[in-house]
Amino acid sequence: MSVDVPVLETDRLVLRAPEPQDYPDFKATFASYRSRFMGGPLNAYEAWMLYAAEIGHWEIRGYGMWMVHQRDTGETVGMAGGWCPAKWPEREIAWIIWPDKAGKGFALEATHRVRAHFYEDKGWETAVSYIDPKNLDSIRLAERLGATKDAEAPSIDGSDAVYRHPAPAALRGTQLAHGIDMEIANFQDPLFKPKGWAID
Amino acid sequence: MIVPNAPRLETERLILRGPEPSDAEPMIAFLLDRERADGFGGYDHRGDAWRWFALNIGHWQLRGYGYFTIELKETGTPAGISGIWNPEGWPEPEIGWVVFEGFEGRGIAREAAERVRRYAYEDLGLTTLTSNIVPGNTRSVALAERMGATYERTYMNYSMGEDMLYRHPGPDEVLG
Image 1 (cartoon, chains in turn blue, purple):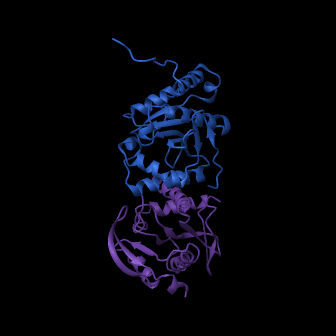
Image 2 (image 1 turned 45 degrees about the horizontal axis):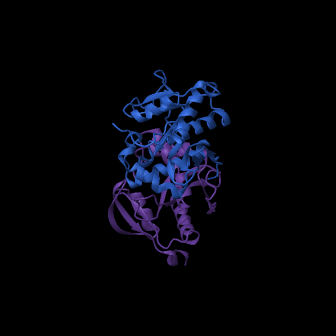
Image 3 (image 1 turned 30 degrees about the horizontal axis):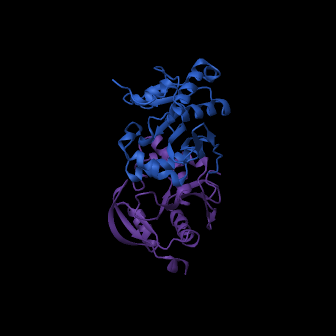
């Protein structure tokens, strides 16, 4: 890519530019029921064209969606980043985690990192996430990230809910930021580890 | 440069170069013109047309080729696009061409497409090329035939539906 895509790191994840070799993982998820809230499921042609558009978005906007890799295995687990194609009312922070990688806190960890990048390195003052009202997992995640429903903000086409992320200042050394860090830490190393099985 | 791997090709009257941000508006205008874009695959919404502009950039990165912007040497104006197209699901790489409103009837499409065909054989090393044309697009059929391409078969295209596949003469014939 001609645009410089920064590599972002977290404890468990490395976020890199989407590359041609990552496409099969993307395609598998967008061919599946998992993508139903993101315009899918898509056929092979549609999935490839969307992946190409993800790459073009980086070149046109200077930011975009990172491919999220597990640090230890290098495997991809999903994508997270900024998304603002034409007709989007404002810049969105978006995420998708492959179905077999869900439930490990990767979306929270990756999205928290990209949001910090946009706020602290790129000077964004605000961001939203456009979420299908039926996509309860994503609404839950938006709320865990401190986002709240913004009923005043325009949506993409009226069928999506707008969640507004907390402003940069609300994430600098605050209880909210600490809570997110704690939750991520708990995914990495649970505070409560049952020893053996309950006997009853 | 948003497509660093796109070469700059020249013909007598034209420059073929990778897409630049300033090409977005003329391209989007073309794609939203349902009548003109009918044979190419047009869109009703600006967001979808923008996405096509973005995915052509991605096509260049994923395949190493894509659609060039055709620029008039004399004025520097974008007059259309021509290139090699081969998204997943396509039968095989094809040469495509589009001339924007106001630039028809001057042989621009042919001049660009012939240069692109030479580039595909000489520089990309392709050994055969097709053009996919929807039935009823008589202007494109006429150009394909003037370029020496012949009808091979009709197939179902993922995005265009029923589509005719024309096969171009091979490298030996074209490069002489």
